[in-house]
Amino acid sequence: MTILYKAIRQQTKSALVTFDIADLPASTFVPLVDLPANALVVSGEVIVEVASDTVTTDVLDVGTSGAPNANLNDANFKAVGRTAFSSNGARGPRTTLGITRTPVGGAGTVGSGMLRVEYVLLGAGTETEG
Image 1 (spheres, one colour):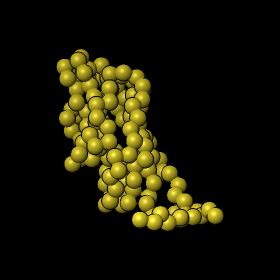
Image 2: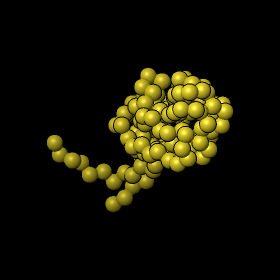
Image 3: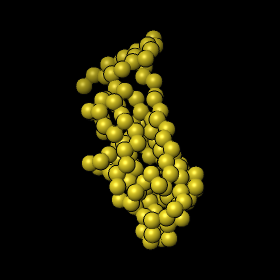
Image 4: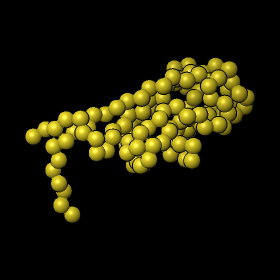
């Protein structure tokens, strides 16, 4: 296969959504970021700003309603910090990424953070070089 040089360049787009523990019911997919058709996620992260006060464990998965942990599995919601994820290679029709929260040992009343998703639109150039 011959690699074809293309002078077209894509610009990375970023979506940033804040959430609170009250927004994330237990074991329920919560849609947060709509992605257009042909979007390829290149990176992202869950940023916990206020740790969950759930008694035992509290984890966050990032993915779609059909594959809730396709992008990130078990980010710790009980610790302040960031958990990064990279592309899983999925692209295609319009889709929505979201968070599924799994608390153990009580629902918890405190906790908040952000979901950041960076993506490019395949085939959509914003400029040319060369």
